[in-house]
Image (cartoon, rainbow, N blue to C red; front, side, top):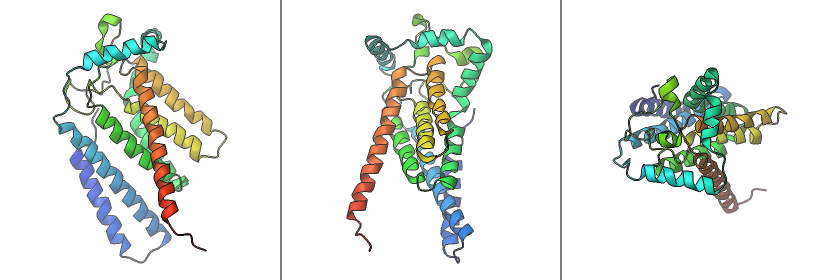
Length: 266
């Protein structure tokens, strides 16, 4: 499964940024204002994605201590009486179709769901868009920094009974150990769960539909998928959700501070 490369994202950011600047010099119409806003947002997101992909070449992804930290997380979860990820994996593997579906969901769902969410939010609920866009940027940046502290996922512990579902059913999204951001020892925290939480909570917060609560299933299914496939510990997902909560608090705090400094207009 191939990602958009950093240079492709950089070109996209440049084209969108230049387009937005050129359109600003023309007489403003309603459709032109929308296009300028869309190009500006796409340029920003493409730029952030470029930085994320460039982080793959940083010489910081050493595997030292990853196995020991994975064992420590497993021990801590036992002390906290968490249900074992192994029982969930065994349940999924009882049904071949369910194991394949879980593996595909883990590999595919999180990126398209996040993109669709941002597009929907930008078009239908523009007033909510800045909050969740900023939270996405802060969450991803925090996950990127923390994940350079290497942590091995459950599938690296066959002696405990775990297996890598991708090796048995295909559709692996990871390369060899030490290949960067999406490598084998980047388990903590789980970007999959963090992005899924952003989508679920964002839809519930922004939408007024009675069906909006159904989108809460996205975070639940993602949490189950990352654990059943052996790609993350429960605490990896919990840490990502906590980081999202911190990002929301930071964004709202900054907005309050900026609002208090803006003189009121009668």
